[in-house]
Length: 164
Length: 415
Image 1: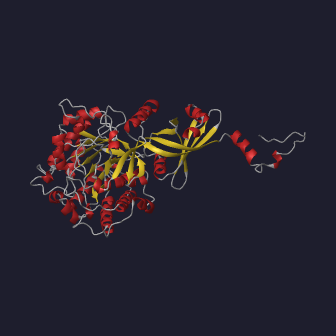
Image 2: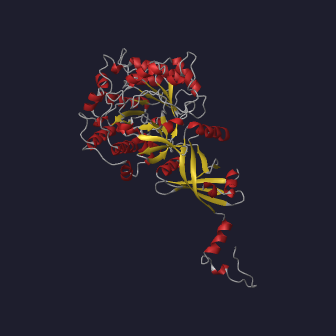
Image 3: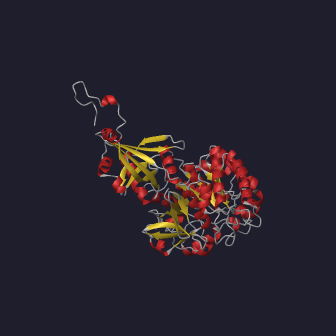
């Protein structure tokens, strides 16, 4: 099921170093905490990222989400301005074992940093948020959500300046 | 029995939604113990996984065999397990669809994992000592025990703590797994050096011993062991101070200052075991004879002047305060006493942590005693963590990762 959520487009986007990857957690009051997570990638149908700071807000929020069945979201923005939003739930915090050692080596070699936790996330939903695509969807599905002047004939009789 | 909560796991979870279910599971795994099925044991590979035997304490079933030492939960929480006879109603660790799971009365509770053993296990020092017998390992902590014998159990000692099986466990370890009573500092230095070759494995060093009241001043002998051992540890590090914890008898301020000044250690824990003077005298007669309850507390306060606030702790074996016939009558009464004393300690910069009492076969508080309820442990864990927040105490030196044996300090990573 996770493989269907992480489509070929999303996997390609996750693999591309130019993609900006943002993980959004939230605190007890629901205040979102977005943080760029360059290390975010797909592994065996799951999302994985490395948290380098044990006392970080992301790490604490993620722990609470795991403890209390909360969800987090991920925003991916590609170099060609496409964007994807993924809803996920923390499945596991890897803080030890040989699996941790592999991530620890990566943190040291690639980022020159210590590692607190490798977070394993289960993707639940994915949607593309690319503006052009969303505008097209909106025009098709929600016909009332348009200003009329956008639909009006221009003085030369050509259709209005609808963007779809 | 009256005075004890009768709520089930699910009822406790529902009543305390602020208490994480995984930590609730850990707490109850400690409280009730575990039984590994043959299927679960079949995937425990002694070449890869850490098996029991080197821990300072024994098991509920009294067997010293190569069973998994502990479990890891999905959130990274570790659970030291005490294999428990089936008739005592433990949780079952089984294998299903290739995954290790915890079962309670046939119901799957959660997935768990075995610990990977460190690379230095199985190697020997230049003097021939097995390195895992020199230094044991938690998932991310080195566990050094320079002297495993507790002199409270000797003729002049006054009596060991009634819940403790350190000496009976040591006797078995000596005959079955080459365990040494005392460590050679050179063996310690070599083992630490070998352990540090494994990237990302360890985050802290922990040192403890049995109490040794001998010396010019009471406990001077114990102090000497620690200083020698900590100096041996420290030889492996560039920094003078490292993330570390010393768990010792209630030493005087002068003794603690000497240890702090001469070694790499950065935190100290002096376990008072039970937060009630009358019960302390009954349950910990050796500690009562050589230090006394009030003096123990005073020395904890003094320790804050040496190590600083958030660097001093004391452990209690939660549950022994309810053992009949001398214990508190009800859980409410016990909780009130525990929290009042813990608050006095916290106000002086000392953090109290919970160790869930497990009736080990080799202790005086062995089989046949009634366990406190799960709800009791939840209330005390929440209470201790709230006190830390109220008094601004961090517990980084004894948290889920540096230690992993206290469900209350497990909470500190997020609550």
